Structure formats: structure tokens, C-alpha cells
Image (cartoon, rainbow, N blue to C red):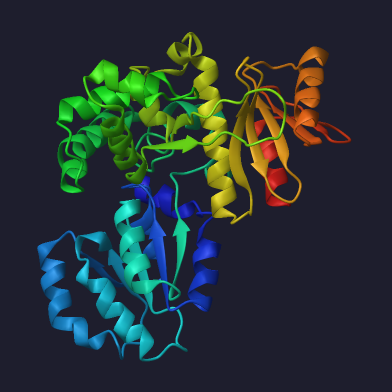
Length: 387
């Protein structure tokens, strides 16, 4: 049943991959394990090598000489597992630079892929990032279900029975097998403790020194471990917005999770009713909204850079999407927005030169007046698509 439903759901990023294949000899599709990269890639071609499988590695060794002459698009999954491939592809591409759409490379470890690309395929390849399912892709599935369970295809968004067992298994495999294989030197127990501490801090400033003190590690070691977690598409960090104002600004980043299903399992929250009574409900909702907006911007290739703004006295804007016309965005779990909240956001945004203000709330109506919007998340994502 899952496979039938999954194939019916069109991935937003598919159009970006199609366009990139027309313009570049190779395209690299990156994203977390099991987010749907392979399923999407196989809609483009049947010539496929999974480079984590020894059988496919051996098969490719015998067929490597045919890559230059084939007219098929060739897919290499988990390409970071065979680094020598990138140099060979460079030679093949350089001998006929006019041919585009030749290779589709899939990878689950961002730093490894980026290093290989920069060393061997710079200028010959376009990178596209695939996230777990987002609101624009899930049809009639409710936003609350996606918020609770996350967007991994096998993680419960399409099949009731798999949440939270699938997420627990996914985290266990990453912590005990994948992250050590990718170079993370931490013991699995330490990695799990760090992930749980980051989950408890989701939507808040992250202080590597405080985390290090709790774990008995130096702040540089914790920062290094966080880079591995970021590279594995588990967490991401928002930088503070730089503004020329008299008040002192915070310099620490904020931490968020790429998938709120994983976040909730780390926080041992397994039902929507349980979620609504958590003291960190607002942080979880903020994480979900920001992750959805950034996923949408990436997959639509919108030229918007994300930041947050916070002064040392606690005045804050949850998200700034910085582009030609920057947007200040405040995220609320309430179903109404008070005049005082509107006044506070507009005044704070004006001090840093931003006129465009938006509230994302859990009400049903979209209210728009001049440079002020009060909107449900799905309506705001639709608005972003039109920019």
C-alpha cells in the first residue's frame, strides 16, 4: 500500500532535477537517508548502481568503460562510498562537455559529497537538496500529522503503524552504524545524549561550552560532533541576523531538527494529545514551521537566506528570510494574534530596516493588510511559491 501511495505523491523538487539535467552533465541529489532520493531518481532512469552494495560496485567495475558511450542517464546511489568515481566521471564529462543530463549522483552525507564535488566536479555539476515530505507534497494529510510524525516516507506520514518504531530504528542505525562509518569518533551513548540535549534545545540558542560541560567534552569537540550531525541532515543551525543598531546582539546560533518526527521521538512524545501538553510545544511548532519554510525555499530554489534576530535583552524575531525584500516572520501556536503582538513585531522589524512582517499562526484565516500578513503555514508556503 505504501509504495502505491508514495508513487502518487509528486515531489516538489522533481522539476528542479529535470531542469538541472538539461543544463549540466551531472546533478547531485543530496538529503537524509530514506527521504525518497532513490524513489525519485528511478523515475528518471533504470540504470542504477547502489554503491553501498558490493555486488553493484563489482558490476560497475565491469561496466565503467560503457559510461562514456551510453545514452542512458546513469544513477549512482550513496556515491560517497566510492570516492574514486568522481575523478572518473570528471574525465568522462571533460571529453564531451556539450552533453548534459548524463549522471545523477545521490548522497546522504553532505560534507563528504561536497568535498568530492569541489575536488573533482566543480563547474560540471548542479546540487539539489531533497528533504522529507513537506506540506506542499502530502495531499490531504493534515499539517498536525506531519508536525507530529515528520515527513519520512516510511515514518508514519503515509502508514499509521510505523510511528514511532520507525524513527527509533532510524536513529539507532544512524547512531550505531552510519555516523561512526562516516567518521564521527563519539561513542554511540555520547551521540544519543548529545542528540537528546539538542532536541531539548530545539528552537533555542545552542551553547557548545554548556553542552561540553554536561558531556564532559571540550566545546571544540562538541562543535565537531554537531558538524557530523548537521552533515547527516539530522540538525541545522540558524545564524543571527547582523544589523547595525545600538543594542548588543547575540552571536550564538539556534539549533533545529530537519524532521520533527525524529525530534519528538528523542523527546519521548508519541501522540498529538501528548504533544499539546508539552512545555516545549512552542519550540516544536517553531521548528516545524521553519523547517517547512526552508525546505520549501530550497526545493523551489528561492533566493532567500534564513536568519533569526535577537538582542541581548531578549527582543527577538523568529525568522528573517533575507532577499530582495526581506521578510520578518514570527511564529505562534495561538489561533489569534493581538494588536500588541503586531505592534511589537512591526517596531522591531523597522529598527533593522524590514517593512514586510508575517505572523504564522494556528488559525484558519489568512489576513493581509499592506505589509502585514497573519497566515496559516500552508497559506504562507503557497505565497512563497508565487514570489
